[in-house]
Image (spheres, helix red, strand yellow):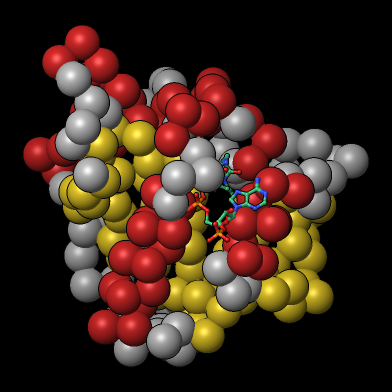
Length: 173
Ligand SMILES: CC(C)(COP(=O)(O)OP(=O)(O)OC[C@H]1O[C@@H](n2cnc3c(N)ncnc32)[C@H](O)[C@@H]1OP(=O)(O)O)[C@@H](O)C(=O)NCCC(=O)NCCS
C-alpha cells in the first residue's frame, strides 16, 4: 500500500534523497538541476523542508509499505509539492512531481495529485497550476488524464533553449 508522508524538517534527509533521485532520473522534467541541488547542505534541506510545511506550502513523499527490508531505501517512491500564489492565493502551484520508474503507471502519481488538490482546496485555492516541459509527453498525457488542460501560456525552459514550458491548469474540487 502507498502512504503519503508530509515533507517536514525531521524528514529533510529523506526528502533530499528522493528529490536528488528525481533530478537524476528525469533531468529535463524540472527547472532545477542535480548539479545545483546536490551542492545544498543538509541545513539547507532542513530549511527547505520547513518552507514546504506551512500554511502556504506543502509537500508529500509517497512511501510503499510493501517494499521488503532489502528494498527499504527505494520505499520512498514519489514526491509532489505545492504553494499558494503570493499575489493570488486562490491559485496554487504544483511543483516537483515525480514517481520512481519502478512505481509508474500504478496510481502513485494520482494519489499524490489527489492529496495536493485536497490541500489546495482546504487552503481556499480554486485553481491548480503547473508547468511541464514541451518534450515531456508522458507527463502531459498524465496531467491531461487527471483533468488538467493547457492554458495557452508558455515560458522559456531555463535548461534548454530548444524547449519551452507549457502551463496547465485544473479547477480544484
Ligand atoms: C508523470 C508521472 C508523475 C506519472 O506518474 P504515475 O504514477 O506513473 O501516474 P499514475 O499511475 O498515477 O497515472 C494516472 C493516470 O495517468 C495515466 N498515465 C500515467 N503515465 C502515463 C503515460 N506515460 N502515458 C499515458 N498516460 C499515462 C495513467 O494511465 C492513469 O490513467 P488511468 O486512470 O486511466 O489508468 C511519472 O511518469 C513521472 O514521475 N515522470 C517523470 C517525472 C516527470 O515528468 N514529472 C513531471 C514534471 S512536470
